[in-house]
Length: 465
Image (cartoon, rainbow, N blue to C red; front, side):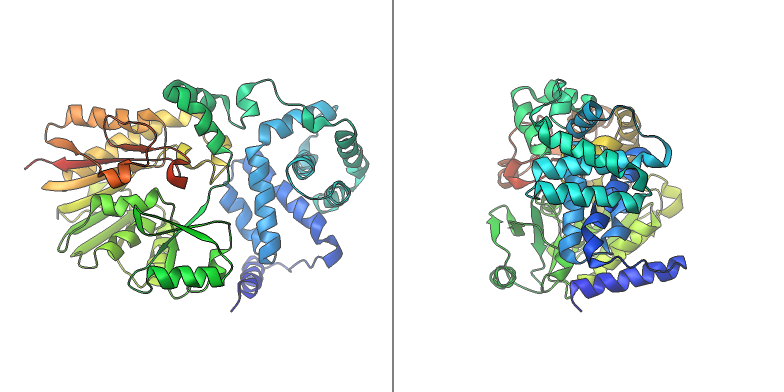
């Protein structure tokens, strides 16, 4: 089954589940519908706090792979450039739109994004964006949209930039300030990286295919690739694609996993006979890597509090021909799931601000708030304490986040060491540490773009005998 047929089947199943009739859009209006859907997704993210993944999922299935990719690019690109798009909008729209017309502001910004940052012709961008209004109950405002977009072109509005440096950088003030405060002269490059498109990383399954044949299969699919010395099973793809359409996906040849996340399993280095826990395991990429790296693990437990996300762990492991004990519970609630057995190795991929992956998930920069950080730090502290209780003497715990904020990383580990005399930090091997552009007193801090990877932090702890 090809990928477009898979999309059609998912779309049909979705409408059947909802008890709704599928709406058929004529080919002549697909362009307008795409713009309308992009605006609707932005509205859901920015006005209702819905994640981009959740808002996009049902809509992507309505299109073939090419149009689905275009829709995602419109959404992600607009999120990266949001403050600038809003700045232009405020300059050209006399009065904010309200109520059910508010979504049309997002449609206008989609138009600005096309006119400034894509190769869509000005005529098509204006015509299709204005046409999108009819799918958003905005027929009466088509004239307004047309006038604003044409004024934008005529007055070269795209040459104007916000004076606020955070807005010009496409970041909320608090993240912009935090990066500058913590990273000094490195801040400019970090901020620049947050607005780059993240590369697609794959991790091939050496039990099913070797590197040479995997690269050959990718090249035959028209996918140029790079490899990395530190990633023995990792491959960087030089452009994005729908991975489910790649040869070998259904056969479990590979998984999608950023290069920084691929360090987790080899740093923790499970041994034959180990009892291993993956805490906060969804969507299962690291669990799978642990099992692939060491097939003779005696017991592997993967725990997550979200049943839907845990189902994805099961699905991903099954596709790769792997299995683990899955437990749905809050990891820190030991009474709810722990059977008393101590673990040799624990991977704690802690809930965090996700500030290291905002180039890959640009909605995070607008959904995450400064006030979220203190509660996250408290959860991380509690998880560390609880997981330490169920680690064997001599065992190792790998603390990981996809954050670049010191309070979640270095400071969190320093506090843990002060409070736990039986804990020591082990050095991260140079083959991994060489990629970090910042020296870290405890652990390894990878910054966005280091070695083409996302921002990530690791600290390898050992419990003294």
